[in-house]
Length: 90
Image (tube, rainbow, N blue to C red; front, side, top):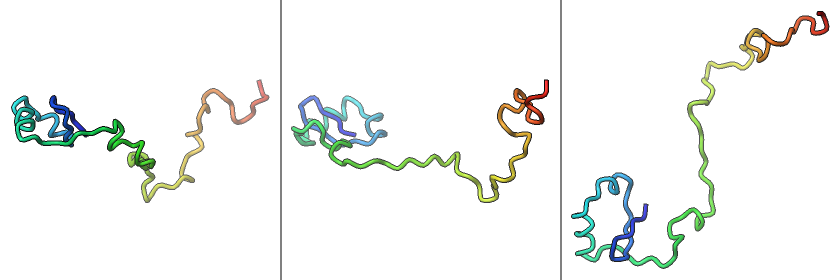
């Protein structure tokens, strides 16, 4: 992430570094004139990259021994509401 120091310079920090950042650290970075001036407000943003991240939810990936044909007929949705035997029989 980019963090702007009070003197206007920008430094790149990880989330952990940002969370551990103290006032003394900020003063030290300014005293050694660390960072760079950034003119473009979209520096390092996704606007420049024009790519999408591929998100894979690993919690819902099927297991190797999982077979879709193993679903029992009593696992059908709404089977307690709809009579599947004879829907016209009252």
